[in-house]
Image (cartoon, rainbow, N blue to C red; front, side):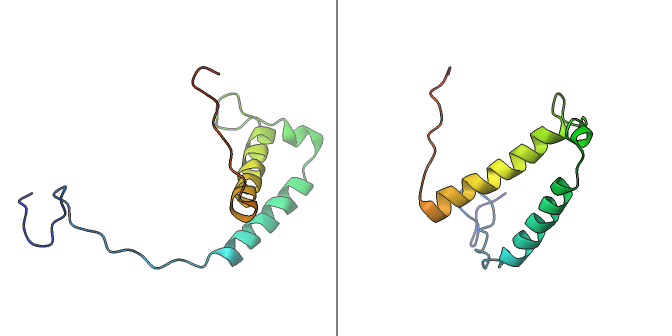
Length: 88
């Protein structure tokens, strides 16, 4: 790409910032469906394998719930999480 007017420092066209997307309603609705799904599971359902090697449904559900709760804690409560040092 030849640098020219309107081309960014890295040779690519600059990208205009996008307007924020109001997604709260969609997130609330998605969470409601997730809770309904989880509430309807049998004990055997929690042990079903998934396409992720060595992960059962309970691992995926835990990951989804942990991500939502972690985000809430960081954003609403201002609590951060430190990553363990390399090798831990």
